[in-house]
Image 1 (tube, rainbow, N blue to C red):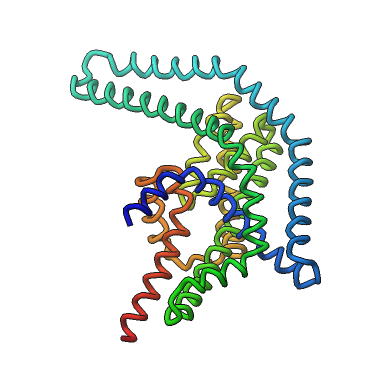
Image 2 (cartoon, rainbow, N blue to C red):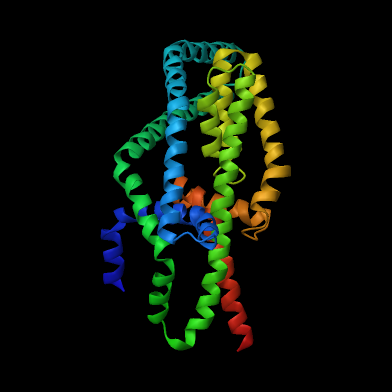
Length: 327
């Protein structure tokens, strides 16, 4: 057992492309099966979907990337002015609370709070920079994921049969049923959640573009990525979006808040019930607790995988309980 754990630790870098491949495979699986029913071979169906995906990506980069780069350049140009404005607000606040008559204990509390806030902002900036650097350094893993996903999709039945042969005959039927339920939940969650996040990003970017924001593309991307985190994602994404809008004007910041609220209402009332439904079959309280625990234990990665892991845990515990009761 110790040897197996040590081996898994040594080969941990391969888990990143494997995870990406699994997510891509789950996302494409329904479309691959639909094309297969229409007479396409599985390999051809996968390659067709890859070609369509590359075409969409190329068009997106052709039209979106130049605008995104312009927005980033403008943001960098305005960053010194924005930093000076924030420093002016902090200095004004500092001058106000340093006036005679303010209790020393309250001053000390404010000083400590400001120092803590500054430290967290610096940590957040370093983490964001590290994440961006990690994306570029992990380019090999990103490129490897579609290759691995191709073979996962193409040979999924063969892999499944071989895995079943490794199990004792008495366990095969039960574990096959368990895996079928887990596969159903993961397929629904991954496909639905990615689609909802894409639509949230598009709707947010469109709304801010119509409101006249010069950072509409960047803000749409931020909100789409943040929406991958259940419940807390919209709040996490709203902070930089509103801050970027405030750099332009308070009016635009107010519009940004309105767009975010409207898009979240659309997601809650229309998109999530129709697309995601009850795919993970967890209560809202269980989802919130899972996200909090995942973020505390594993950071950003924990926030992203907490809900499907909790859903799998529910299925496994239900399976074990049913076996215990039946015996």
